[in-house]
Length: 268
Image 1 (cartoon, helix red, strand yellow):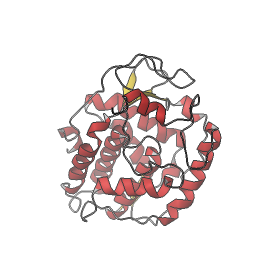
Image 2: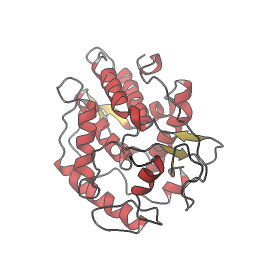
Image 3: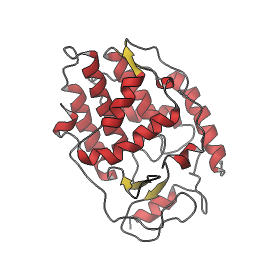
C-alpha cells in the first residue's frame, strides 16, 4: 500500500525534530541550515547558464539541474520534485497561503516554460522584460517545486534567464528580508492575478546588461528571518493532526488553491 500523505511528510524529518533527513547526519535544525548554505554556495561554482527559453533545455530540466547541483551533497531528493503539499504561515496576517499541489508541479513548470518561450524578448524594452521576468519569478515561487531550497534555486535560474535577455539581477541591492517578503506577498497577490510586489523588487535589483556567474549567495541568511517573515511550513492534506513543534500548524485545510498560471495576468 502506498504511503499516506502524512507518512510522506513525516518521512522527510528525523523523528521528533523539524530537521530534514540529510546525507550529513546533522540533526540540529540551525546547523543544517548553515551547512546547507555553505555547501550550496560552493556548488554554485559548478553551474553555468543554460536556460534561455530558446534552447532545447526546458525550464523543468533546468531548475531540477540547479537544485541537484546545489544540494545533491546534502539531500537524497535533491533535484526531485516534492511529493507532499505544503502551506506557508504568513506572519501578521490571518491568512494561510498554500503552494501549488505537488501533482501539478511538472505540468505547471511546462506552462511557465511556454510563457518564457512565447515572449517577444527581442522587441521588448528593458522595463517590459524586467516586468515579465518578475512575473515568471512569482509563478515559480507559487509552484515551489522542491521540499527545500526553492528560493536559492529560483534566484539562480532567474539570474541566468535574465542575463540571456540583457537584464542583470543584483540581489545585494536590497536587504535579504526584502527578497523574502516579496516572495511571501506572492501568495497574497496571486489570487488577485497580481505580481505587484515582485515587480517592485525587480525594479530595484535589475539593470541593463548581462552578468557573470556568481559564486556566492547575495546575503548571509539570518535564520531568525524564517520566523519573522512567515517561512514556516506545514503539510497540506486531509488530516487534522500535523506536527505541533514550533513552526508547524496543528490544523490544515483540506485542499490547495489552484489557478491557471497562464492566465492573462502573466502574459500581458
